[in-house]
Length: 90
Image (cartoon, rainbow, N blue to C red):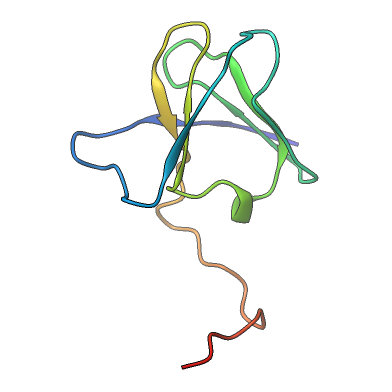
């Protein structure tokens, strides 16, 4: 299991179809997945998401930390989705 530090959202980096999850309780992660990675706030180290897979944590997913109010985004700049998934029909 890896602990991955998220990063702060940059100015103008908000995708039009993305959303920001708000962590109401700083002692409870916003998301629980079925992977091996835990994601923590880049400012205070608070746990924001547990047991996540890289494909679940994209740039469209942002989380506002309940402890320090920093808006975090996953560090997925180099992630490439596995091939063989559903193909888009034209």
